[in-house]
Length: 104
Image 1 (cartoon, one colour):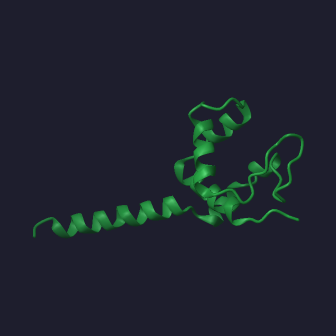
Image 2 (cartoon, one colour):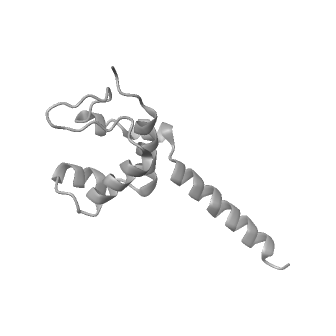
């Protein structure tokens, strides 16, 4: 059993870390959202052609942000913002904005 205990502990830590990264940390997302709500309305309203991001499914939010990060979408402001975010940051923002409901 030499090393087996360490491997199991490592595997557990890796899985636990992966789950939290996939789920996204809503509190971190709220903290990071200040840059987003400079243009995107927290109310979920569309203004000046800037799309609403409130209430999006997390997987869709992550896919869109990754497409900006990979320079597959053409918007230099969004490319710059996405480039500065880690995968955990994007997951956190997805969780936060996905948890919000658009204002009526």
